[in-house]
Structure formats: structure tokens, C-alpha cells
Image (cartoon, rainbow, N blue to C red; front, side, top):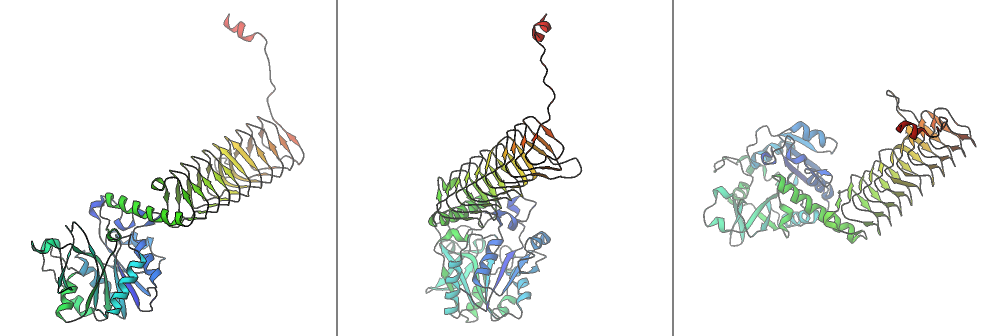
Length: 458
């Protein structure tokens, strides 16, 4: 749904005392994004032409995170309630005409379809104010929706509700649609004459009713969407529900998961059909996994591209890397940022790579470190090989050309170039360039002293 006259206010000023954190509550992560990013993403999907974010506690940190988002910030220096926050936000909407959504930065599970339904109800009713409500079994702590002959006339907060009103099970979710500029005079009439001495945005309902302005509501089908995050337990619950939503979408698109409940996938991860993911896998950031891959348990992949038909064995860690088709990695391999496997490669157990460009069919099967290196095609790296890339001050590059065979326990002291079709003898420390088609080895001469053990015992 898109509208040229749709705007939004995102409330992100609260301290989040119950989080017991030095970080702003709205920046705590959920599936790879700070919490406040989710309502912001909704405003983009809905086509909002203007979005104002109200900041307060640790305002500079929040601004830094969302500085490139196109949102306009207003500072609520004192947190005097939701009504006061909207009054402050309205300074950025003085010239705006249309529907303004009021969203909460600590309500990350709200979905686009829910807001589209609310906007449609609001605009169809030509309403001044609309509120998203929900039916709950236990309404304790929520503002109650008070109706007269089916029409909503006010919202009463828990601390201000009468005994009879507390029995009402329809509650306020905190999500509103406000019509600008019609609602502006009502905002100026808000007061703090209540038990908490705060300015409630919920009072806008009774003010609009008193002025004879139209008020409408939409009922939320799944109350979980309106869950606010106020402490770490609720944060964990929101993360779990978001993961469930993400995993389900992937499975419906053709991805198999051995145990979705123990599979952790960030919101921006892309997985193509017929990939199989075992339990305990973490996929983070902008990771893209192509079709027909197998990702074994305990694997962590971050901001990487995994080509088609790759096999990532258990316990491997891949970050900032590109793997082209049919690579076999692990178990217990560590591919650090800048690794590029050109295809059909094997990177075996306890192999670590960093800024390594590894050509077609080249392999390092076990217990090696390849850093700041460029390997050609069909290179074999023997067990225990190390590129000694750091001299204590600078990093240096090792280049190994096509068809080189490297024996076990070899150290390459960079900078070096190993010519194509060369063979490096096991146990060598290579400090000079090796020409093509050569044998290079450097070993101390082996000495044998017959009977040495017997003599030593005597």
C-alpha cells in the first residue's frame, strides 16, 4: 500500500530502565537489526513521505545509528508521556497534510498488513483519530477501550481505571493514525491531570469525541504483534517470535531446516531453495546462500556469499567471504574476511584463511593458515602449512601459482612468489621466490647416532 500523504511518528525517546543496560533500549538487536529499525522499515514499505523519530535518552547514539535512514529527528528533552512526545514530534509535521501513523520503537513485531488494514479503516471512516486495539484474556497494565453503543469514546489507563473499567478486555496497542492538520488543536489540549501526571496520547480519543470528530478503530488479529519490549525477557521473546516468522518464510520458499527452533537467521539473509540447514546454525547479516547447499550443525556464517551446492561441515565459521560453487568447507574451518574460494575447493578441518583468493580446485585439507595470499588453480596445500604474512609491522603477500604441490609443515615467509608447477618439500621454510617447475626444500641434515639411547641410560 502506498500513499502520497502518509507520514509517521516513531517514539524512541524512552530510557528502558527495566533493561538494566548502558545502551538505549531501542538499539538492542533483534534478528540482525536494532529494535527501532523494524517500525522504520514499515514506514518505508508503506510509502511514508515523511517520518519523524522522537529521541531522548542517549539521543546522539540513536541518531548515529539511523543517520542515513532519511528520518527526521526531534528531541524530547523531558520524557513527560506519549502525548508530550507527539506534541514535540508535531513540530516536524507543521506543514504536513494527510494520515500520520504513530508507531513505537519498542514494538518490533507489527506487520505491514496490519497497518494497511488500519489505514484503510481510518481513511474509509474519514476519521480524525484511529486506534489499533486488541482483545486479551488478561488486560492488566493496558489502557482499556471504553465504548458507548459500540463506538469508541475514550481510552482509560490502568492506574486511572475504575473497577468496572478494569474488567474490559479490549486494550490499546499504542498504535494510532492521526489526521493532519485536523488533530493539531487536540494535541494542544492534552493535559497531565491523571495518576501518573503524564501527557497521554490516549486522551486524544475523548477530546476528539467531545469535539464531534470521527474516531475509528481496527482490531488486531494477532495480539503478539503489539508486544512491547521493556525488559530482557521480553526482548528474548520478541527475538524468538521474529526468528519463527523468518524461518517459516524460508521453509515455505523451499528451504529445509532440521530444527527451526534452534536455527538463528537474521532478517536480511537470503537462502535459495533446496538448501538443507541442520540444527544450531547461525546465519547473520547480509549472507546469501544459493541453492542445494548443506549447512551442518554449529556453523556460523556472517555477511558471506555461499555458492550453489556447497557443503559447509559442522562447527565452521565463515565471515565476510565469498564461496563459489561446490566448495567443501570444514569441519571446524575458519574463513575470515576477504576469503574468496573460486569454486570446487576443499578447505578442511582446522584450516584458517584470511584475505585469501584461492583458485579453482585448490585445496587445503587440514591444519593450515593461509593469510594475505593468492593461490592459482589446482594447488594442494599440505597439512601444517603457514603463510608467515606478518613481520611485526606490516602484512605481506604470498602468491602461489597454478599446479603447485606444497608438502606438509611448510612455512612461507612472505613476500613470496611460488612459480607454477613447483613442488615444495615437506618441512621446508621458504624465504625466497621459487621459479616455475622447480623443487624447493630447506631441511637440516638428518643425523643418526647408533646406540645413543643405551649409552645415555648407562
